[in-house]
Figure 1 (cartoon, one colour):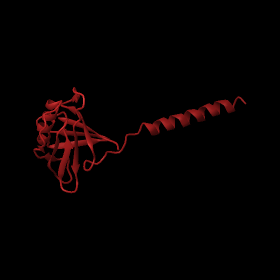
Figure 2 (figure 1 turned 90 degrees about the horizontal axis):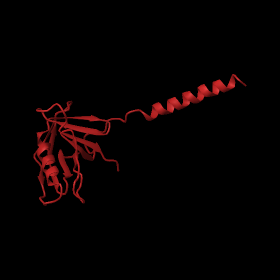
Figure 3 (figure 1 turned 30 degrees about the vertical axis):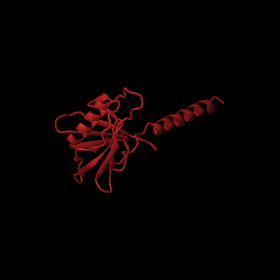
Length: 147
């Protein structure tokens, strides 16, 4: 009986350890294209909505026609992008948008002015980071939205 109890404790510990390790694995990197990316940070600072009813800016790069689309804090926008094959080089055009005066206009303006400065990107799991050539830190950080 004394030999069985320690063996059961060791087995239970191994099972619990293995299950914890499975949960700790990082998710695979999501694709850049056709993923709905929601803004989380601008220049390392958390993007905050200060007005009720505002929308957190988002971005989708459509694979079919190299078009961008998204919504700022309230205005819809779109444009184009170009990828350098086999690299993480990405350029995004200036975005055309509707123009409705709305809450959090400063966040929207900064977001739309920063997008065309993009020169490259990085994806880690569910996080997309857009960089320019002037800064070592990401200018815009997004998280993939689950549907």
